[in-house]
Length: 466
Ligand SMILES: *[C@@H]1O[C@H](CO)[C@@H](O)[C@H](O)[C@H]1NC(C)=O
Ligand SMILES: *[C@@H]1O[C@H](CO)[C@@H](O)[C@H](O)[C@H]1NC(C)=O
Ligand SMILES: *[C@@H]1O[C@H](CO)[C@@H](O)[C@H](O)[C@H]1NC(C)=O
Ligand SMILES: *[C@@H]1O[C@H](CO)[C@@H](O)[C@H](O)[C@H]1NC(C)=O
Ligand SMILES: *[C@@H]1O[C@H](CO)[C@@H](O)[C@H](O)[C@H]1NC(C)=O
Ligand SMILES: *[C@@H]1O[C@H](CO)[C@@H](O)[C@H](O)[C@H]1NC(C)=O
Image (cartoon, rainbow, N blue to C red; front, side):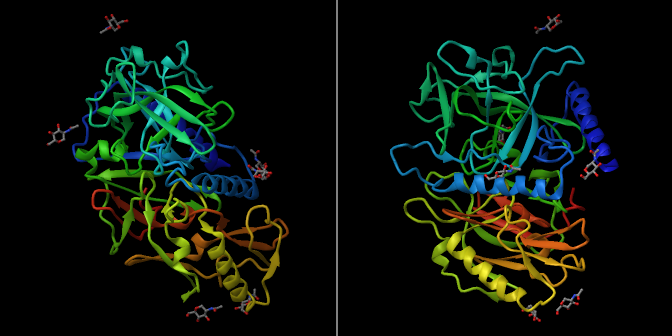
């Protein structure tokens, strides 16, 4: 609990810092950018659930993973190809960023920008938040914990004129301004003005870094938006997908088309980490492996070529076709830090389960249990706590690369009050798509190079890589 209080205090402190430093003119790092990634369940998050039990924490994350995988089914192409706007996943990402938008004539202690939490999403490209014009006649606002962005008061707000700017889709306009729309599988949508604005980030060094002229969606009309909590404490999306409007593409001078992260996850407590761009990506201490990042039709997600899976070094008999993209937009395997637990398409997932049943049948002191069956399909109990001892790791065989996932990224282990210990395979079965989630990505440094279309990774102690 003491740790929690310290963490909560630190989060207040960092917000204060953002407040104070917002008034200092930050000298931008000319060659990189670092943004804090806030885990949904961490004390720094507006969605922090407070004191929860292990099972509550895990259940929330399992539900999130399943919802996201369900939303990602057929995310690649809408069955109706006539709808050119990519269909995205509305299920909320587990990481968010806090950033400042706009420039206001404010007297201290008011800030010269408005601060918002946005979901970090590698599955979509447009960054958007709700603007005050949603209240104009004919438009629709959705309830948000923060007042809509007062675009009319910001001195750096510039709507993009219709058909001129390279980030505009020709003839997609509202009045004289070009517009964006993001539609989600569940029927939800956001429509608004595409505008350029100054974005301010509190860098790791504590200096705010203001980046001018970021093109974002100023949402003025929405339906069925549910963005975290009952009152939407998260106010939109921070898009990091493939598209030209993606934040990583817009800051080419700083990012050179690259970003990286190193995720840590400890006993069901996910911790905050950093998203780094360009020159801020530290040199890895070990040799990087490289696999292709695959772009599929209008999808903004980062697909990778998954060819097979091994458990304890034995390759499973799975037809690689199960992981490949289908013409109708189903299937495929995407790397998705917005999902907690990896989802494996059901027919391949069943092979994994059968192999593990066989593996654990060799251990008479492990007994199958249904105690966490609302979360995971395969759990065992043992009378003496042994942590990850005797639990196998898993290998994801990718094109030209092997992602070795340690037992710590394959299972969750929990000691019960009775003294017994339960461990479960931390992977769920899915219907449409395979998503490599954050839990299986822990303690690896991942570097996305979207210009070269490659993903590099190497094992790393992410706790040291804060
Ligand atoms: C947190 O939960 C644990 C276990 O349920 C309990 O023992 C502890 O008193 C709780 N702490 C607070 C501050 O509520
Ligand atoms: C998780 O989903 C199940 C089934 O949809 C639901 O009954 C349960 O309340 C959810 N739990 C949490 C913690 O979200
Ligand atoms: C900013 O606000 C101050 C105090 O309210 C005012 O004196 C000043 O003229 C304003 N500047 C601009 C550019 O609006
Ligand atoms: C990026 O760099 C190019 C070439 O150095 C320069 O012309 C351009 O203005 C820069 N763009 C931004 C947004 O700084
Ligand atoms: C796991 O692999 C190791 C190394 O190949 C082997 O010695 C061990 O017997 C395997 N464990 C099981 C349970 O198959
Ligand atoms: C459980 O069984 C394995 C394999 O038979 C053995 O190596 C391990 O020591 C056993 N653990 C306990 C606590 O008996």
